[in-house]
Length: 329
Image (cartoon, rainbow, N blue to C red; front, top):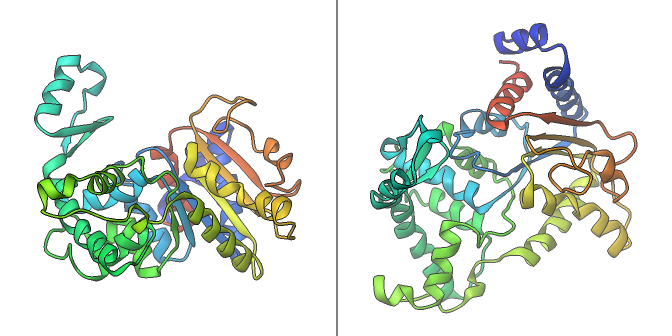
């Protein structure tokens, strides 16, 4: 038994800590039966450098699909190429409004206690991905956001610009395993904003050319169609679990694929076979993020016998511990 796992099993005996053990054990048992796991990422998990443990989970086949916000998709790559330029702000709770303005004027976009440097991160990746968007646009090809990211990685466009060990990038690990990644609401991201700006004439001003077709990047409804096909095919051979970090669209989008298939397509399909959510949202029966798992039974998402867990805590603390436990570290 690994040192971290041994510590957790010995000390985490009650309340939220006990659920960490129960959920981790159930995760391990679920995969041991040959099942698959989807992980959903809300919040700023990539900027919190969850890749330090999530990447190894992917490499060891503990994660088989990911749904994340557009911000989490791009921020893993931002950190990969600009890590040395990030500025940590440990006293972020004491910042004045003028302090925030000063950070803005320095091109430092704050995410809690750290800042993403616009020029070294956003603009650096922008210069690469615009070439891929333009190439697809000219060829009349269309791809999902993650597919453009995979192209950037596989074509070694970032090879000479990495500032962290690539083994700590969850997106590189996902690319190596060719995991499907869904990014509902991708337009709510820096790169999504940039792409739309290019279809509105920004490119002519900055790069001498624009993106002609806004449909060059596949988005929401097509993503759901892709998810249906993946879920139906994958669930023929195994159950699929749902490990949700945070709430919001990253979790709400994929979990409803089951009732969609059952109720709208009138096809029989397995329900989600495992459910765990790490959330600091206040428990509320009128809230997506704060609803208890039992409520999902009434929507045809979970079964009465589905192992289900809620850990009310900070995911930046809990998820790495659970991943270490599952990896027997």
